[in-house]
Image (cartoon, one colour):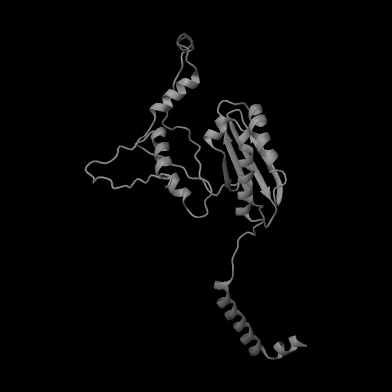
Length: 237
């Protein structure tokens, strides 16, 4: 028996044990390490905003066209969606284990593009976001300040921190739970609008027309030497 050899020769058994320990110590740094196996299916999330719409309106005008295009996607496992009375629409699309997440995101993006012609114009103007992300959060940060109020702190975090965190390799999304941002709220007077024959869309268009950032150009630069080419067709004699 093999065990008898080591019992009769304890020094030999000790040497073999030490060699096994030494070999293990040399191999450990080069072995792949994973705390948990990758068992979660690839997930792609679609989000859209329909201002002023109810959950039923979103389900009929946004969810139905988009979800009808999801059927038949390659390696599709299942999908689920939520529509809220605040105008938010979120769709989570899950694919089979082992599916390429990048290819799955492209397929979902193409499906959303096919549904865009029948979506409301307000939804298209705000954009339909397609992101490769998981619904589980990695971590949560909280910020506090002794000199800034909530609105100032939220604006500072949004401008200076969120973009930097979003650029970190491996981060798919970064969001805030604070709605205290600087904004302008305009109240309309229906009586005056009716007397002047103005609609809310015309007011919004006038405000948007004033919110234009145009390039001012440069002062003191050399004259431009751009050449202009004209194409002329003439008949030869």
